[in-house]
Length: 47
Image 1 (cartoon, rainbow, N blue to C red):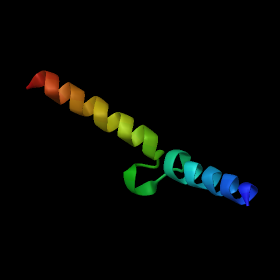
Image 2: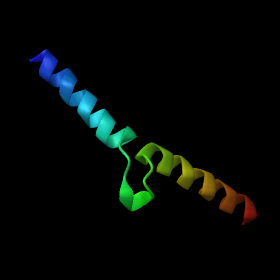
Image 3: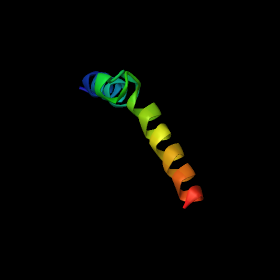
């Protein structure tokens, strides 16, 4: 059972963090989130 849980966690981690997503520019979600926060910080400085 523990092996199944670890395999599932590995797949979920890949899917959520590293898989390239076409609808956000073929980049991983983590990179898209970093870009969003960087852009937001720049806009906050301009305001």
